[in-house]
Image 1 (tube, rainbow, N blue to C red):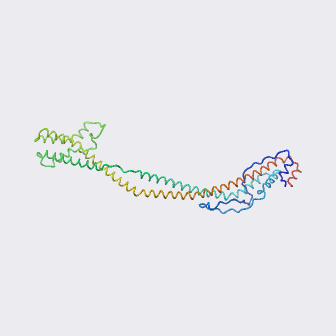
Image 2 (image 1 turned 90 degrees about the horizontal axis):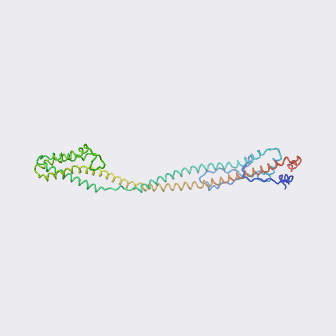
Image 3 (image 1 turned 30 degrees about the horizontal axis):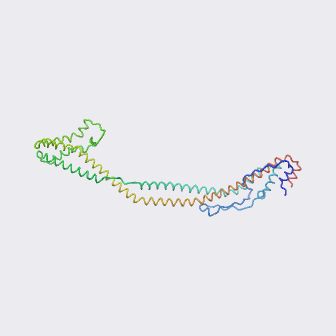
Length: 357
């Protein structure tokens, strides 16, 4: 059977037919849906499915490409514009794309929600892993507690021995032991100073600073020296003076420094005990939290995968509908443009003959 376009071409065999461009298609005629492949429900485990649209056959002028070509020729030979027919094709396929578009919207929303939850869990997992690594890498502070306890004991023994030495020297003149105690404490007065020139470097020395730190210990040592000279040889008294002076100058700071270091060391021991208890309690908790977050990530990934698969399938079907729509529109327009270009070269009798056939 000869189609209209073939009849039209038979009048102009000297003109080769214009090529018809291939394109894509999605369109609709009023109230006539086309069938589309519904996504497998097993792949949409996490997504609510819309009710399937009713399956209806394509209208004759769309199902048969030759009929659509004839439609394009008739429109081209007549004075009608192609907009109406193109609108019918587009409307037909638009109605068929509605379920797909709604599914794409739902699947996209679910994927966005699942992706947000996955990102949150991944951030939590990274944070917990950092905490676990930091806790595992935490090492106890090294301490020298025994050494400083021994140093403190030696300092105490040194001070006690020095006190008895002062008391023995002053006893002849001052039988009251409280006098010896007062002289001894006066000599150790620099124990309470904030700084000491003997333990500092790059310190600017002034007369006031020297008197403040050395004056009272020197006075106490001279006081003992004066009373020692009254009944001891000068060499013994001078030796006693030098010994007591340096004990007064150094032992006070040594005792205070040892006490300060012991306080720090005891604090470090307490911190080490807290760290040990913290590791014992929190390491299993952090490891359990990591395992829980990893399981939840696996579960969320398992929920996301079928939704992504279903989305890809629906988008593929939507693309096929659009491709089919564009193909049919271009097919119609190709025949319409060809017929319109040849219309004025035909007589009225020829046009009526083609259209009646």
